[in-house]
Image (tube, rainbow over all chains, first blue to last red):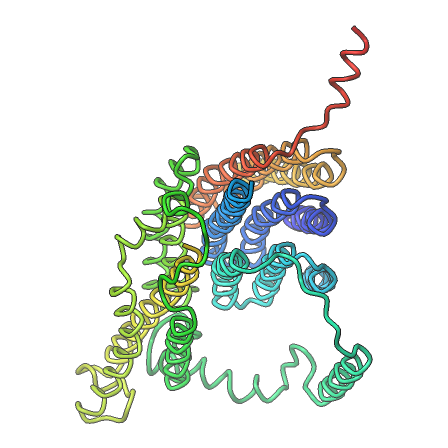
Length: 93
Length: 324
Length: 109
């Protein structure tokens, strides 16, 4: 029963990876990484039950939190870069 | 079936690695490295190594991405075209790879129950842990007590890395031309992430403490907990601005945290000598040897957690200060 | 009773797997950044609820269920926030949605 969900999640992770490699703009890639992260959390939860070791759910929880922090760091990077470019343009103009 | 999942994840990892090497946009490379770290963590998880998977997920996918992006903000985003000799490099790499593959022919097969590590080393640890240390998580027992010297070395390596980065980057040398207010305000005007972040940060800190002290019973321990707590404070710095994060944990306190771990570890070792045993012999720390072992592991894991938090936060602030 | 719970959790897991897969295909085939974001974030939340709900039914009343509820809560709290932050960052940076459909509608009027 769990195998079907695991296979679906693994295939989706593969599709997200293709989007991360292809995606024309950087936001596509960030979207793909975000999706990859949440699918990893689901994969970890299901496989923890597949193994019969519910105490591995700590990893899924840790990963859900870390994914959020990673994505916000990326967006902060973009914001700083946009600010820096607009400031340089203002100073150069 | 699990093996097929593992092989599939490894195939995705190979595709990611090829994509990382082929792209010349460094930002794309950083994103793909986050994905690669997740794939490896998934593989560790499938191989039933939960402690390592937790460390890889916490450090590789969260903190590493943040640090790489901080470094990327200080340099350019495109890779410079290299002009090295490609044929020579290819020959060297191919020769090294062939030698490695040839060396793996001598190894026992994957999961072979007759391998020496499964017949001598692993059963000894599995039998002696309930007798000497009596904690359910054998990995923490091996890490903290049976191979305590190695972990002492690891704590010193983490400390040295922190000191090295601080020497290289200094603190507060202004490079960028952005006004201080704009850099330091963080995502202050983005209300939704800020509200959600404020709700979450206490729970992340609590979860980090849980992972720290639960390391003896389940996956966890000092390294993972340090990374998670550092991630929580980095989230605070991202959302509320770096200046408020520095007022929460000033740089002097961070230096103290960085030095505290090795000090505590060394102190536990010397306490072993003072109380009559050998260096890092926890059995003499209390009247009951098993309780002494557990107390020793608790203390050194606390030291490790504190050092990892201090070092990761110190490196983050060093990078962020350069960009001020 | 246990067969009822088994059937229910099997249905939830299958629906969850399907929605996760649909999200992946959507993120790959949609024409524009914002439509991809829509596909990814909606199916993320629905997939998380269905899959974790199905696993929770299998776990019964135990510590594992409480941990799963915590995971579900964090996922539901952080995943839409990340999508919102990403969309607002993309909009502020100047990425425009596809405008072909709007021009077709105006041409038809």
